[in-house]
Image (cartoon, rainbow, N blue to C red; front, top):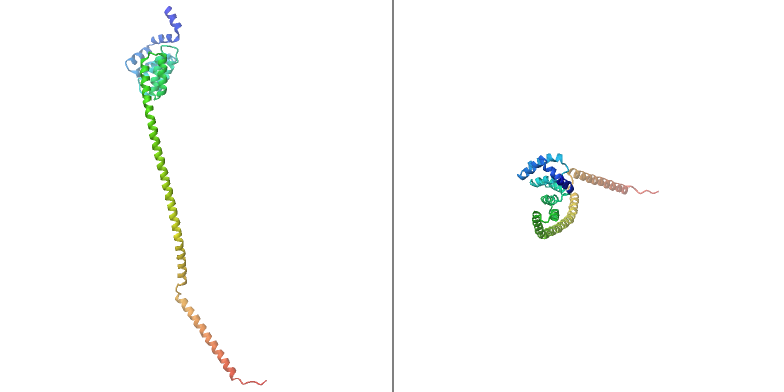
Amino acid sequence: MRILLALLLAGPSWVERLYQKQDPDVAQGNALAAQNEPDKALGAYEKAKKRHPDSAALAFDRAAALLKLDAAKAPEAASEAAKALQSGDPQLRPPAAYQLALAIESMGKPDEAIKAYSLALGLDPADRDSKVNLELLLRSQEERKKQQPAQPQEQKEKKEGKDQKDKEKGKEEQKQQQKEAGQKQEQEQQAQPKEEEAEKKKEQQAEEKPVDRSEAERLLDALRAGEKNLQVWRFAKEKRKDARRNEPERDW
């Protein structure tokens, strides 16, 4: 009776853990997890979750099993570990923080994982696993930061080189366009006198175009007729003169 009363005074989490130890599915899940069969362990925990949906201890067990699977389960493991971390059990919170740090690191978030490892060490300074993982993570971050300045500089140089090439290419294209425009203008200027010369030549050819045969005959006929009429007129004129000479003078 005194032991039970002491457990009740210690907090509800102790009662919960004592109760779960009596749960057959939780016991089976723990046994399977110890045998490195996380898939089967999760199946047993899922059955127990139907009876203990808000159990922080069960969330801790589920997070441990999920972390043994592939990295795709890391977000779900982080959620379960965070749930266990929020519990009031002082013995459950440090390992839950460690599980949370592992899950976050598996998710590829080193900065957040460092904070989680630091939290775990704050809750339990003797946690050797959290300390080792934190040191390794900090070391890898420092090496990454040392390599980062060289990489942006290299990218910057590549970008500047590309910009310079683009600028030179733009100048070359502009020069080519100006050259083509000048050549086109010169060709137009050269073509203009040729066009005028061709037009004049065309006019000259039109003027020098030989007269059609029928048209020439008509012209000759007209000239001959004119000349004949002129001769007739001249003959008539001479005849009138002769007639006047032969007329006697009249005495009026």
